[in-house]
Image 1 (cartoon, rainbow, N blue to C red):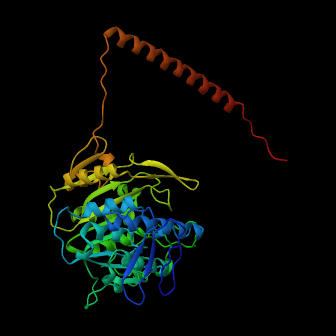
Image 2 (cartoon, rainbow, N blue to C red):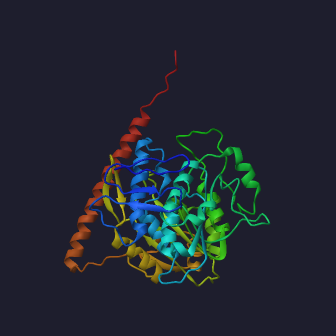
Image 3 (cartoon, rainbow, N blue to C red):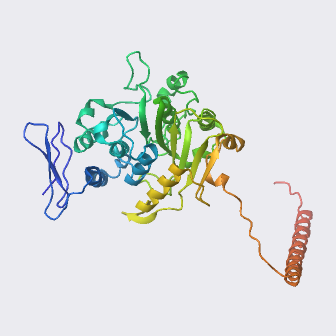
Length: 416
């Protein structure tokens, strides 16, 4: 049995053992055919997200790896959705947006956390292929009403979702896993000229483009776009390189200052290495909340870099978060717990005093270990250390004398 998607262009087929999806005649109803022995799960999202991740990985392998950017690991998507939403809250008419949506992994996780019937999905992505697959994702997750909101195009130069007066449309929730580096010298000047949208600036232009080694940190533009797209009480989350949270200069530092001074940032989670298929870059998730706060309110910083289990994907070693670790992160964030060597809750004032650093490790207490020893043990240790240091000094003096002798023996020889 094969999985076939009936669309304008067709998308592909999956091998035996994967549930099939087929359109029922000319109607908009979609039926699910499951192989014998596969039990339906209680949660439709969990069932389909597993299938969809399989399909994207298979599609990526068939394409030589070039489509890996089409999805975010499901565990990361689940963490982001859980950190943005509240359990048991009766959401109604919620709007969710992703300006770099890919196939919609982040949006689907968010819609599932909110309730698919309680939200509308909006997206934009420069890739037509990924937008096509996102439309399929909406159909599978009973979000057909949002199909007109899926736009293919360049979010930075031509944002598609706007109000009638031309201003950017704002949303209750915004999520994004943008490209980290992508050279765009052809339109960087026009972005830089729009100081209202790109209030922290844009990356410096490169003189020459190397497709294999892009240099322009385009993710900084997406951070600004995400913040601009939030309602006054909106919440957002974006994946960034972990190096961003300790930036000392440039556009990155200006963004850090803005999100702290304006109380926009409410949490940071630094993820384990190798959690993404496409990059070995360490990543962190920034959590935004536009509701009014004061300098004495707290930001939760979590270092989850030591979590996760290792597994192999092809020839590559990867890490993934286990369910209990996802729960650990979520509960720590929601309860604003300080856990030794894992998390801290610090005020905006404390962050300013630290130079706007958002790395949890910068706020952990320094440990000093005390060992009980007798006076005789102390004196013996000091004698041994002193003798070792004296021997090292003597050897150093000998080396200095030898260097001086070698230098004294050097003579000028005129070239013939």
